[in-house]
Length: 340
Image 1: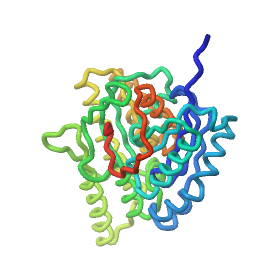
Image 2 (image 1 turned 90 degrees about the vertical axis):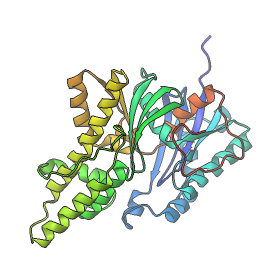
Image 3 (image 1 turned 45 degrees about the vertical axis):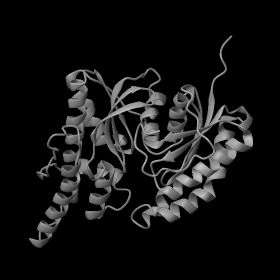
Image 4 (image 1 turned 135 degrees about the vertical axis):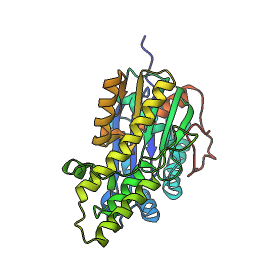
């Protein structure tokens, strides 16, 4: 007799997406509903935390109801309720955590707090059902740039991290500097192919920490270049700046990730996070991995950005290890990967 699948209702509200999903056995997505606030925050050139929180309050219940409806299931059919409790914007996180605790209590279901960064990694289990740890993973998003070794489900060793700006954050800042607006990553990625990467922007290396990243110097170099060109009265070649900046970021991400794969004796590499949907990064990493005989995994773009399906996947493996949360679960805006 076949075992009944473990079905989890997952909630994600760490930044500016209100999301809910129903996921079975960590890899089968029955629904994945996302209410994005991008249009709202574009007016302000970036995410406004107070506005994000208020929008989450407005959207959280309808999004959860829609996720259950699309899955054709009821709360009674769930085995557990999962929610992102960090890292992220504290007000935004609190909306999701409060909703999850209320639902778990009312439905008498176990509550599972999930680390948002670990959720990004778990998105690959949905996209690639055959994928199993251990592996090296490059996590690149608006708030995080990490190089980690996933030794088992929920067990990570951080090999490298950014010392300053995250990769996605630097994309947003440079996009703003060249007048592309928010969100910066997709806009630079779209403009870059129209330009030539002919501006020698720096590629930072952190002495004594070969896997660490630093992007603040690169961002400053772009700003200095723009100021210098304006002072000389030259036309600002936005496409060339976008191409050169993206090339500098991508080359560092590729070289660090492949170095870690070789040093640790792996033959595969996993990418996760919003910036993992960047076409320039995917193309360069794919070419480098193919050349060196490394198998590359990354999720579909919809699973790279913030979503609840990835939270449901990560929650399943937490649940299987007996890791559940109490009703004292709280938002932890600075939560680190692997932290419990």
